[in-house]
Image (cartoon, rainbow, N blue to C red; front, side, top):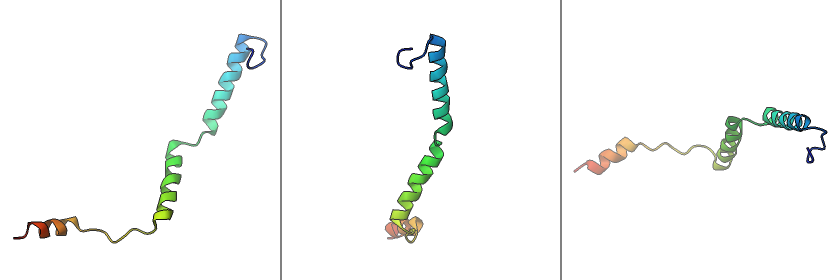
Length: 64
């Protein structure tokens, strides 16, 4: 009650719950935050390099 300057415990709880609900509604979903990071890394990394043919490399290692 003292921290929120409300007249009663009920008002303090109501105020706290309204604040929590507001933060939850304004929060950016994790999926979107991760996508932004992935896009930023992809921009710095540049285009994908030529793919590696692991089967070919493995076959070359086992040829006698």
